[in-house]
Image (spheres, rainbow, N blue to C red):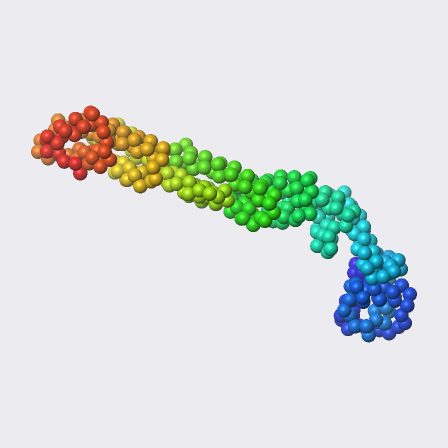
Length: 373
């Protein structure tokens, strides 16, 4: 219901005028409101009309509006303003407590927010409002759809200044960030963290980012090493780099490097599988995948994994399969050297593969006119 003096202001703004006498509680109330209240700035010529409208307000509205009681009690404008604020705050505290008791913590928090924005929380409201804030963020953190409410609530200094409400914020904020990642909405979580300003929220995000950066690094490593399906490699690497950006330092650089290895890792497995297939055949040949993957590995920054991968590929493609190819072809070489043999010789030379048995076979093949391709 509109408060009587707000109703008077609305009617005045609409051009409703009346005549009547001044005096009584309404006369004093209008005087205060014109000087320092809701009607401040209204023309004095409208004073009589405002008093009439005030007198015409129903008793129930007058009882509800603390302005009437304050007009009777106050000695000056400052006392009138303080009285109105205290009485309205007391009434709001009762409303807030009832909303909390009725399981409507979010409604209670909204009431608190209006009061906090309108001159700050009354002392009596602080306890119930902090309780409402804690319950509000807990309610909104049931899934990441409440991320905005949780984040904006936990950015408020009066909420963060309280130990219990602050703890509730830490738990709720972390919960919605984890929920977003679980629902494959990483960009939602990283955007929430990029938008925070309060140091407590930044601390939550810093811990969260480090945890997720490590978790996504494990996912990428498993893809690279063939322990996980690489169907989602691109999206996983994209998310991995997002968390790297939040972590800072060289994290993005290291994420990119690992993702490049994972990109080649899938092809490496395919090349090794093809080598295995060729070794089972009577007529063997060197798969083209061996050379293309080795070229990709050479282009990558040197790391423990690339060293191991290059040695593994060389051992399987050039040594194991190469020796099998030349051994099978060598006795039949007369005048024209088989392409399969020259491809093995070329790979051994290009990638500087050293193996005593392979070296002897290449020497024998060279003696029969074979040349590295």
